[in-house]
Image (cartoon, rainbow, N blue to C red; front, side, top):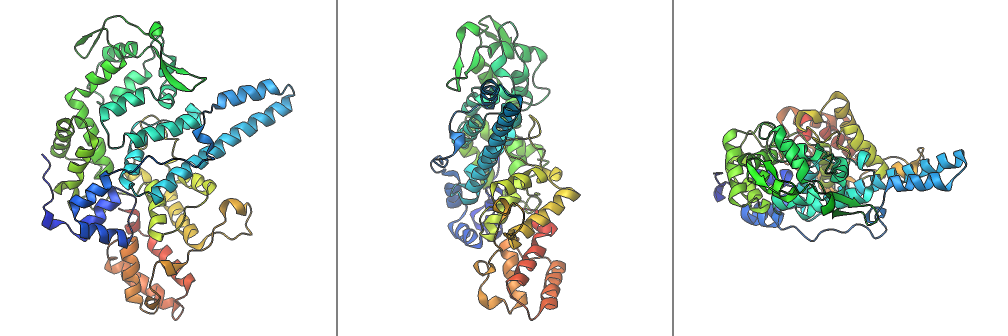
Length: 477
């Protein structure tokens, strides 16, 4: 089993590690609170999710929607070809803007939430049960799925799996809604085993076919936009799935899958990779899998075991994970204590950095790890940091979409540090890196300040921050 971290080993460094991995970065004040509270109380706070957040009252995505219906209406209402094309273009553009707004709402929730681990788990499930707006084309369904992931963030994995099997966005994305008794669609039945629960090698092609039969009858009501089960379309014949024979339905299949020994270790590996390291040792995966099974697939106590384990705080793990684009964007705004940019800017940034929410590249989700960094994405990170710090003047083209005032450094540094270069660098390193800068970097930052002396105004501080955010140390968490 995973060995708990001894209470006497709790430290500021371990508090930093926990808050970064279980959330989206922490300010010096938040770190101090966690250090003082201790590991147990900090985990209590992280694992005690608040009420499910509501979207803004005027958010269009909380109402049933269907781009296909919009397009059909546009075609039927406009006999003139030019007018029809204009209406279709307007409908597509409106949904694109609404999706960008949904992305910003979620990112802003990550930025402000008092339950950062709940949002981190929502992001984890979004990558695990990857579903894309590009195929679903229904923003309401994507928002509903996001709410489902949040609702089950610390719940029971078996219950979450069943909820996903009835989720409209997933049903469309993997064609489950099209499955019929005479033509069972195997997309969902295959991916639920290969990518969501077991992994390759733990099921047979016969299992895929029998599972597909069991899920027939799962349909969507396109008027209410809700899941519905139609018994008359279900294949009620006898099926044999993983040595279990009977008149099996979809829930029977999922219960059988979760009961397989490989399922707990598959989910354990995904969790450890997401929160700890890319290549988990087998003994840790076996231990975390045993924890998940021992807790009957309840996620809250399993996550507590993960975050309380001494292995999670090992030197090889701390400050050795490349920030995902979401972690970079949200974490930067948290550390700088500044607002997120407008929806259009965030939409473009996520696309450039390779993690466009609600549009993963495929059903496997994002690869993560080293894939986050390339020459182009690294340059974009540096430029985006500059945008957060320097802003964008109002006289630029489309200024309403990208306008941003320069950061006011006074919120980050005491005024008396402006004339104390060594203390200033040390202070900002603790904020941005949550640790001292290495000796070589410290010398470079001090040399920059010396080159600007005696200027210690806001522009100098912003440029210093930009230098610090354009380092390898800042890309790691």
